[in-house]
Image (cartoon, rainbow, N blue to C red; front, side, top):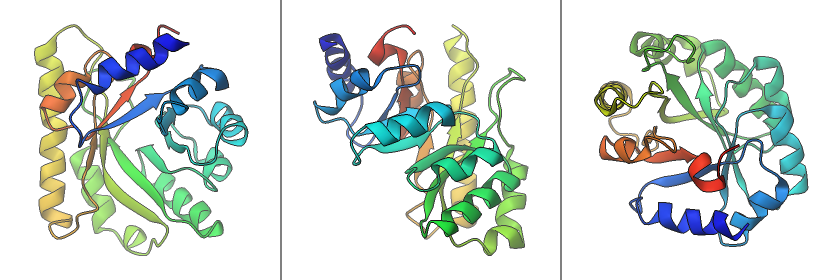
Length: 221
């Protein structure tokens, strides 16, 4: 258990102050999470609703929970009352569902649009044009309970650092274009979530503001 916090301390030394560390705690126990919590960590990421909800119910209320995995529309209602950020918004239909459920709970939910940057077909995500269609559409303009604050992307799982770097550069480029086109005077659109245990250093070098780290913190699952 002590190793978890030692790992966190090592990782923090490699992360600039402006970059948020999201501790990805999927498949980890409440005790694992509390070990980091008692040392001051408050931001945790989960990828499955059925695992996230009981953790929210059992653990301290000041934890900021991020949904980092693929989210089905019919599951949004279960996390809308408490989720701090949904990093994996990959369609207009999902965004509309989040807006609806957030409204029922009198909340505004922060969201990141997931962009498809990897060569792997299995990765979810949208293109630059997909996102522009959303921002230009009336559906988005009529939403009152979501705040799109940036982008998220997952690089190809490969040892080829050049490929990973190229994909992260693509995400940063898309972010910059969207910022210029839609959010030039809006400071809220500021987050780029890219980089996990095996590639977060490259992510930070290419402009990440948020890294999602599980294995390097908690050990192999």
